[in-house]
Image (cartoon, rainbow, N blue to C red; front, side, top):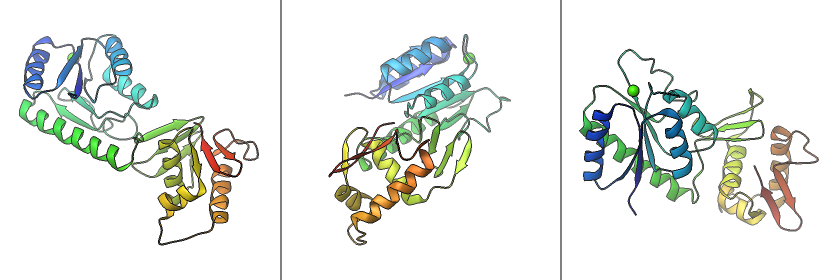
Length: 232
Ligand code: CA
């Protein structure tokens, strides 16, 4: 199946050129000329990559990007900026884009970056089974997997990298029962062999950090005799 690229841009001439070039490379291309339609298409049609202009009618690209990340859409986003626009915040936590190009840009350069982002995205998907977004939110918790940071109600939490790995595994296996044996294997690996008790202790600590009421968890549930189930 062809990879789908969504262009959200109101400059028709630019879009025409982009469409031709992308179609030539074998991509399926979709286009939205204003912010609202762009956001809708990005959410409903789940493109593999999004090219997003900043200055758009109805809703600007920065707000679209923020909203998509808020909704856990993890497709790579390349922003198009005009000279002089503030771009320092575009790539990174606050806005959440993966890359940007300043107009006027070379189409060949854009094509190369698209290819690189799609390749990286596929590789991550493969290595993690199901894909976990770079930034994931549930309840009032926000996890930034790229920077190993976790916040709750805007306060930074002190999670160990092991705890973050456990959360990542849980998120990738939403709603499934994750047994202690699987956690041992996937998180600790076979060389280090903690007891299942150690795992339970880690989960207890994790609950204390992310759950409102750790004795009545809302996210990490115990499944009697089996292990755990994450719903977030
Ligand atoms: Ca524009």
